[in-house]
Image 1 (cartoon, rainbow, N blue to C red):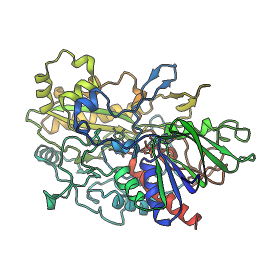
Image 2 (spheres, rainbow, N blue to C red):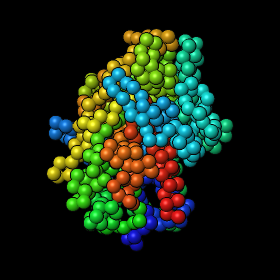
Image 3 (cartoon, rainbow, N blue to C red):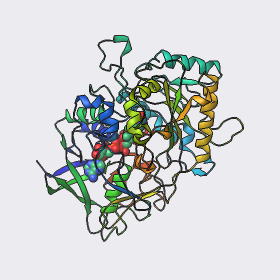
Length: 517
Ligand SMILES: Cc1cc2nc3c(=O)[nH]c(=O)nc-3n(C[C@H](O)[C@H](O)[C@H](O)COP(=O)(O)OP(=O)(O)OC[C@H]3O[C@@H](n4cnc5c(N)ncnc54)[C@H](O)[C@@H]3O)c2cc1C
């Protein structure tokens, strides 16, 4: 295998996998370095006990909170990264999210690009990941140049009833955008079997649009693309002046290997990308690579989220529940001026998931009782924007271990969103006293461990004094180093981050194709 390439991409998740697919047709020699392996296709993929109780697909890693307590972060080191387990809810940010947005606890800063700049890439991302949805239903969405490639996934009966009840009560529910290969018109020929196991599970039949199926595998059909799995990048080397990355030092097969490329892209996820830059400190970059601004690792965000289970009197036999969402409170609520957030459905509860999420509280409950509770459960996911606080940050100790300091923000807005959901439930026949705060039985003892939506640790911007990356996601301080994953977010909005990471990877991919000629 050669050790010199045109481009090296470190990590194969939403950022790296999509970038590889975008660059593959260029014919440039591309090396993908992925610390994990392919996620095995096995029956355990769809086994709630294996996924939630045994944590079979959570990769072993130890991080430390700001008090030095060790925890296991919910990270997934596989080809495809976190998208192998994600719910494939693929939302665009609102146009206002790209501007400065005032919140109760401070300001979500403006991006150096506008929604209009991103719109063409959102459209490309929706088509690349074959998203099902319906533009035009959500009153808060921005302009769109092209409808989704596929119609929205239809609601199952209990969710259709919820949608109808919401409309009757004056709300504006819309079809949630989903990246799954479900062609309802052509069933049973379609790949997706519309099961309960999507959100939080790997897809056994590869019907989920994740970064492996939509990014890496199609990229590897090009001879110029090489993937090395079980290859963990340890550090980046530079020339003495510090302007150029000259070597990518990688642990592979029990030995260190060194690769070179004209362009090096770090796509290891918000925490691990910051870790890699910090671990690559040298004489020219004593605080970490590209870190003259002291912003690498700072401004960590992961949403102020809450999962809520409402118990409905009717049974809820829905399999694929994530078809409905509501943005009525995205920018405020009656008598409340601050942004509040997004409400969406989450994967359907089951007894094993409840046990896995809160083993202590459910230990004594008979399985039949939990099963009965789950049959009546209607599950919601509430998301409020958290702020990029500089003190919320990744640092490394002398041994290179990750320390993650995080304090939540906009708790008042999150409480308001919960209040709005409870009010809604009164209007749709799921009375308040039937609401269980899922945190009550979820394993939330170490909240920082829920790193699914991690973002912001190498933000892009116009000013090298306050940002790590320029508008093309190239490090201000180096000529051939890029960061292409959720690290670049200057603020996170209140919708799931993956589509924005995918759209950005396409945008930077097109820039790189032009740069490389
Ligand atoms: C359970 C779950 C559900 C989610 N649901 C949704 C959803 O419905 N919608 C949504 O928008 N988002 C969702 N997300 C979040 C979404 O998956 C992430 O935002 C997205 O995958 C981030 O992309 P990324 O490229 O930044 O990082 P990742 O996708 O995590 O990719 C990083 C890659 O880098 C590799 N890597 C790390 N360090 C190194 C190293 N040193 N050397 C080599 N390789 C390395 C990792 O193994 C990984 O493959 C969910 C996440 C989880 C965990």
